Image 1 (tube, rainbow, N blue to C red):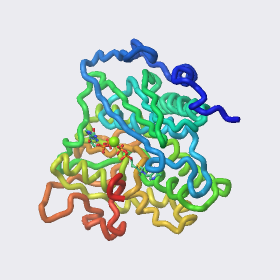
Image 2 (image 1 turned 30 degrees about the horizontal axis):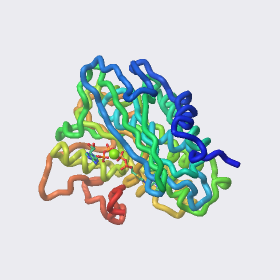
Image 3 (image 1 turned 135 degrees about the vertical axis):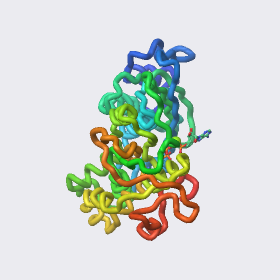
Image 4 (image 1 turned 120 degrees about the horizontal axis):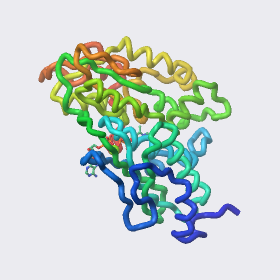
Length: 338
Ligand SMILES: Nc1ncnc2c1ncn2[C@@H]1O[C@H](COP(=O)(O)OP(=O)(O)O)[C@@H](O)[C@H]1O
Ligand SMILES: Cc1ncc(C[n+]2csc(CCOP(=O)(O)OP(=O)(O)O)c2C)c(N)n1
Ligand SMILES: [Mg+2]
C-alpha cells in the first residue's frame, strides 16, 4: 500500500520534507522555527508569490495519459517564482512553500515535490536560494504556493514602465514551446509516441527553464524595461506597453522563426505554431527593452521596437498591423477569462 499524507502527522511529513530542501548562504535561519531569517545586505528585498492549483495550472492525469509528478510541480513552482525575480534584474535568496494537500496524496509525491523545488533551484543556477520554510494544510484539491525573495545586489531594478520610444524590443528564452507542450498533453497523443522535439516541448511545459542569468545581465546592459513572459507574448507586451505609456511593434518575420521550431508539434496536432508563439504562456523567458544603440546581452534576440503612444493605434501591433487577425482574436492567458 502507498503511504498517504493522512497516515502521517504534520511533523512526520515535515521530517520527510526538510532534508530535501536546498540551503543557501543568505539564510541565517532555515525551516523549523516560527519564521526563517534571511540576510538582506542590499537593504531592499524583491518579493513575489505564485500559486498552482490542481486542474487550473496542472492536471494530475492529462487527457493523453501523462501523470504530473510531484517533481514537476515543485520544479515549476521554483522556476516560475525565480523567473519573476529574474525579471527585476535580481537573484533569488529564499522561498517559502505553502502546500494544501488532500489526505490521499502519496507521501512520495510530496517528497518528489520537495526534490523538484531543490533540483530546479540548482539546475537553473540559483543555488544560493534556499527553501527556508512553509506551511501545510489539508484540502480537497492540491494547491502549491511559493513566495520568493531576491536581492538586487546594488543594481537598480528594471521595471515594466521604463520603455522609451525608439528602444529595441528583445526577448531571451523560448516562445511558444510550453504552449506546444501543454497542447500535447491536452491531446490524445500518447507520450510514448513522442519524437524528441515533442518530448522537449512537453518537458519544457512540465519543467520550465527560465534564463536566470539573463535578468541581471540585462539590468547591467542598461535595459529600460523588463518582465517575464508568463501569460503569452501579446498579453504581456500589452502590459509592458501600458505600464510604459508606449506602443510596441513586433517583427512578424523574426517571430516566424520561433514558430518554425515548433513545426513538428504543430503538424502532430494540426495546430498553428505562430499562435503558440504569440499567445502561449509559461515559457518564462524575458521581454526587455534596450536603448537604440545598446548591444543586446547574450541570449537576447530583437523582436521589435518601441513606438510613441497613439490613441488611434492598438498598443501592440505585428508588422505595423493589428495582430488579432493573426491569432483569431486570442491574446493570451487570463485565469478568469478562459
Ligand atoms: N491578490 C492580490 N493582491 C494584491 N496584489 C496582487 C494580487 N494578485 C496579483 N497582484 C499583483 O498584481 C500584479 C500582477 O500580478 P501577476 O499577473 O500575477 O504578475 P506576474 O505575472 O508577474 O506573476 C503583481 O504586481 C502582483 O503582485
Ligand atoms: C490544467 C491547465 N490548464 C491551463 C494551463 C495553462 N496555464 C495555466 S496558468 C498559465 C499562465 C501563467 O500562470 P499565472 O498564474 O498567470 O502566472 P503569473 O502570470 O502569475 O506568473 C497558463 C498558460 C495549465 N498550465 N494547466
Ligand atoms: Mg502571478
